[in-house]
Length: 154
Image (cartoon, helix red, strand yellow):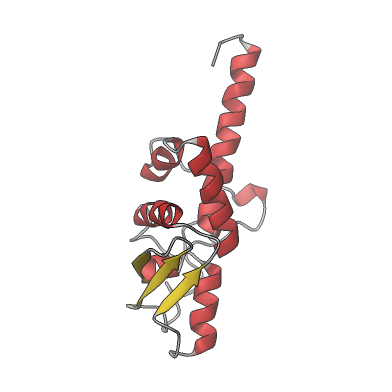
């Protein structure tokens, strides 16, 4: 898992305190705050490049409302944390424990929810979410290997 120690400001000034609306593929509108914005490299980039003239509503043609709701729930787990910074190499990876609210949230997803959330995370370049999803997959894989080794039925 990436580090949560920030090497740069919490968020660019054009993002702090901002809200915007996301319009889903199925035409639902979700108002999100700067905590959500900072998790998406795509949305953050658009806001920085637009220099305060950014539209109040962003269409997300590859995300339906259900997946945006899942992303909002994910972001709530990190609302007060510093900006996510990707680890520079494998030695700096720190996994969240399964008891962390984020991992409980991810482990409670159905296979279909997991897939659409992973697709949306890749589409929006939500690196912390991708990192947590990969961590969950690795943990599940390790458990399956353990179950197979000791012949425990999953």
